[in-house]
Length: 172
Length: 229
Image (cartoon, rainbow over all chains, first blue to last red; front, side, top):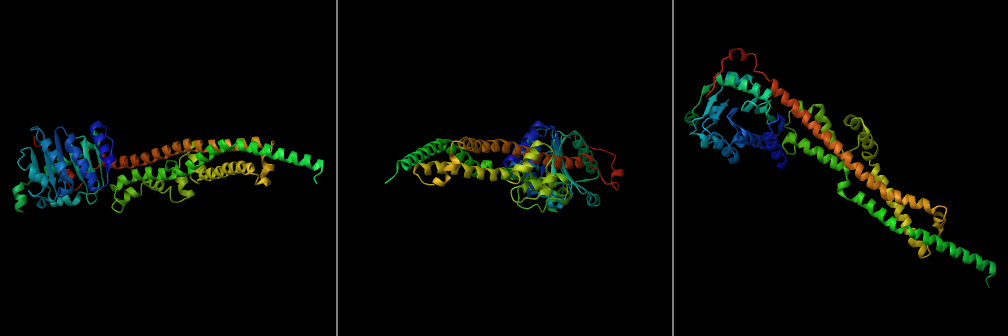
């Protein structure tokens, strides 16, 4: 695991577009942590229910909080299953007051025909799950082709989604 | 009573035995070195080249299951990729010998040939065992002749043959060193191959991310863009 952490850190620092495979939840956590740590302006996440094992560990939440400390930075979270998200989620609990974080819900009819999940940072760094039912994914830092493509997709989905407030999610 | 002729013959034989014992014992230091080198080659884990290749390949392969024991969760389309199959085969190098798979895995070139013909069938270890036996035999004969036993082997160590034994023992000591250096090169080649396989798989999956599109059923409606800030 140390080798993997080191490799992800190197890829994120160098930002040369080198792909890094993600084969487990632990790998996903390492990658998401690195995305938050090395992002400069924005992070967009399209996920099922924001798996707390990936987005909930302290190190990830700490990095997310530090990322959002910059007022010009934005975090957009698009969820397929917003009912599963509440302020009991470690990440959302810590970030609930942040004005530069938005959460939206993707309508079920659109969600049903999309087979992937993704997270994009600065339009050139990403984590892409080709099959949303699998944990396998690929991540890259500094890949403008992949980053821009996934950014376009995220923006398109974001435009078709509706706002979700944390309070609503908790009540639901 | 011993005749003078027999006495002279006995002295000649004794002198001959003494000379042979001296010649053979002169090889003892080089025999000791050759035995030590061969035993080290056979015993030290750093010279288990097949195991080392297998472990290096496993490091690369286990990236695809996050270091867990099972690969069941890995998508079948990845398992079906040629680089994945090659990587999987590299991982098995220490457990079974299957020539067809090896030919699928190995590329062309000198090191591939060396690997296929020497290291993969473990001929290096067989040769090292043989050299250990040769060196030990010469060493033991030297000791035996000194204490005047094993005389039936003396004909092998007369002046006509002793230089051949010298070169044989010298060769026995040098070849494992060559095996060690070549083995390191062979391991490095296979390590690079395993890394290349892993990179090929990652690039193939990355290409999916670069080209993925929204399904046609929803894409036409999604022309407008909006951003938070």
